[in-house]
Amino acid sequence: MLGSIHLLPNVARLIFATKKVTPHLRRRHLRPRHLRSRHLRSAGNQTFAVCWKSDICGLLEIRHLRSAGNQTFAVCWKSDICGLLEIRHLRSAGNQTFAVCWKSDICGLLEIRHLRSAGNQTFAVCWKSDICGLLEIRHLRSAGNQTFAVCWKSDICGLLEIRHLRSAGNQTFAVCWKSDICGLLEIRHLRSDFCGLTFAASAKIGYLRPNISPKL
Image 1 (cartoon, rainbow, N blue to C red):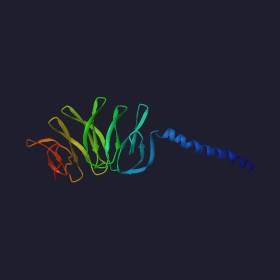
Image 2 (image 1 turned 45 degrees about the horizontal axis):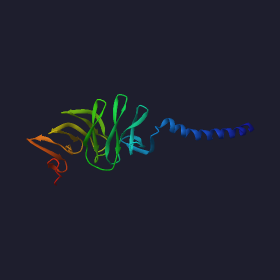
Image 3 (image 1 turned 90 degrees about the horizontal axis):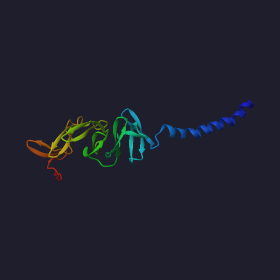
């Protein structure tokens, strides 16, 4: 009995030391240093940590992690927070290249802005602004001397996929299809040859001439 009492201070000291050291070790060895968990979000039947990526300024949901050189970064999607997803730059991991995206605050459709190259591949720098969900680069399509990323969104609001490309003059645009909402084409900007005419089309506005402000 007395022996047990004499052991209590040592046990207490051991518990205190464990509580003091364990969180430090957990932070250091189990979490990437540039990712900090904020709270949890659910997407479908899965729950992910919503983390802050300090180098790309945004709240992003972590799908999984990839390593590139001496850095670990998240392959992310934005599932339930409305906003702008923009591909800023590309990171390589093994033999794959992923887009590093961030979230801003405006809404609109998927648009191809310009192109970025990574290794021997060229990706379209796109953004998405009025449809929530997953943006992933699936594969590449070529049209003329340009190569575009075929992306789709499959988490909320239905599948948004670049099905094919249309060319007009010296520019090439993507035709996007929202397959599970009304079965209609959702087209933000399109130039095509239709009955000998070149035009831009919008799902909400109708037909209009390129580079001219929309008229309702």
